[in-house]
Amino acid sequence: MNKRPLIGVGAVVFGAGEEILLIKRGKAPNYGRWMVPGGTLEWGETLEEGAIREVREETGIEIEIEAFVEIIEAMTPGEDGYHFVIMDYAARAVGGTLAAGSDALEAVWVAPQALRDFDLTPELLRVIEKARRATNRRP
Image (cartoon, rainbow, N blue to C red):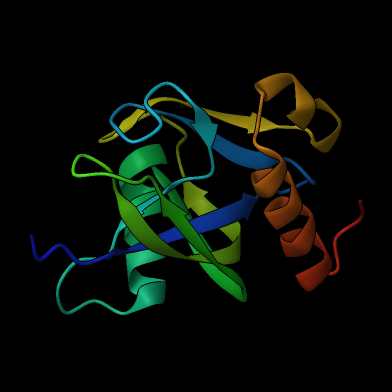
């Protein structure tokens, strides 16, 4: 076995107000789970280009990257497990029309006070808060 970690990119996208863009994942890992848009980096693209592409493909929303937020490792053990090294960014929506696409079952804008209704992991809630602070947005 000569498996290697995959590089992933994701974005905490803020709308015109303080709302945050979430998707319901349409493939493994985490099928059916609410997350921020993101996916695997493609050959020859920069991390920021990958984040912009993934958000567009999954949600129809065009973004502008505002800040790097954090590196996260997501892994499960065993032969059938996975290992992703994910670079998360904070971004703002600059255009497009919201529609679930590619790997997303649903795509929605969520008010900050409603985030807890979406069963987000504590780690994702922490990354969203860190993105909010990195871009000087209100809590």
